[in-house]
Length: 266
Image 1: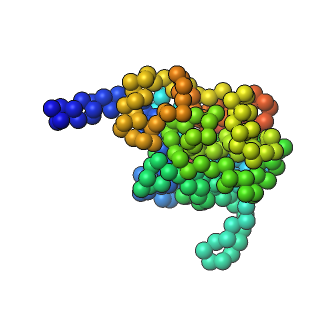
Image 2: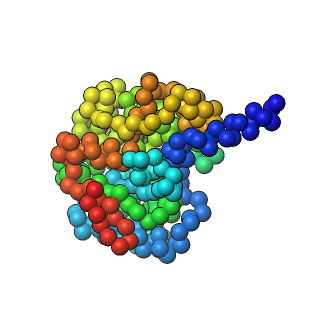
Image 3: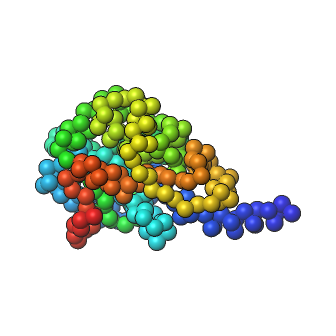
């Protein structure tokens, strides 16, 4: 009977929404050759610099796109900040530092704020495809102030859920932390209650179609898939929903997709 139970659980688990495997972890062993990753990360940096971006929101694809739900094109987002970079040989120059929220490799229900390089960021990609939001200059200035302040880390909640509800403070993931920082910048506050109230009032989350049975099964399969902070519907923050929010309030300069061969407006 026990063997039958686990057989049934395995079969049902394979029917869970593909978002179940869309985490935000640091790169392990890259599936793309390092030279190609380095070339593409430099392409993204040069493109951002040419557009005068002091800070941008950049997304990568960390899973097979065919396994992602409709409307979700990227699995991890981070702030890219134009900074002074110190090289291994001690020389300095200008380039982008990446401000991430990553799941811990040994405990997927916890996260950390980690800075890395553009090449590190794309080392975790399934394919070389970047979603990019360049905020308008006013918002860029506000974001830079928050990212450089204690508020950036204060807004971090290490309790991680892939399906975190952006209107509550119970859990968080990379996209929700990004949105929290955006709201803190717009409203000049580090008060989490005020930030969540403004998210609930003005932000439209991406709805994930998942029934109650599958919700319960997802939580049983992985604690990082909990939906305990949701009501009847499951709504999350995605790259696309952040872009739509910023567009609605005229807060973007550019929203586009960049690949090794072309740039396409989104």
